[in-house]
Image (tube, rainbow over all chains, first blue to last red):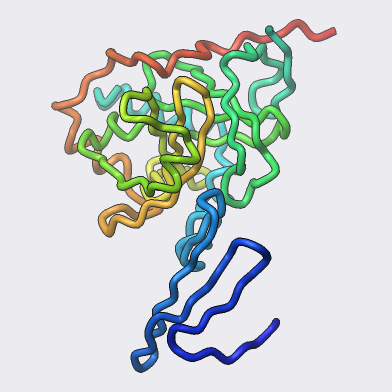
Length: 79
Length: 172
């Protein structure tokens, strides 16, 4: 990993069109601004990871489980 | 144009090219899978399958949140609105992915934090990240259904039947 030391209001550029700016440092928190083309998705890593993990779990759904759930819902008058 | 595709769960099915939904960035964890169809196996059920056309074994159970949470109103970022090509009057559909723990369907949850938004005019879709505090990746659908059961009734399902019942192709 490339490691750079920056002060507040200094930035780094990645490629031609991405800029990461250090806006504020307050104790253990760092506020960062990212300037990038709109097509580039930028997310907090833990949120991104959470959704990715949930997708992986959801992808193994079994058709039989859904059918048994649907019949149960129908019995309960929920469908 | 109608083509036949192989699926692990449903065998060979017919797919109308016009019903294909394109995810230009795939889904999180499945970035290489871009082309999907929404399958309806039971007209009475609000659940649908989002089936990959590129991986026979990849399919997600999805549901429109209005069936269990009529007031679901995620904030979609400007970047996502632009990527989806949504204008003020563009029709769009919202689905959420359902996780069904193997053998324990009653514990199913919906991912309200990563909904799928489909531009109904272009059939371009994105899975977006919603950072509203109320929406989690594991929201119990049955709990919500119990709450809204009396309010929401089946029917008035316009827009979700584009694909209709999957038709099975003759094996040759």
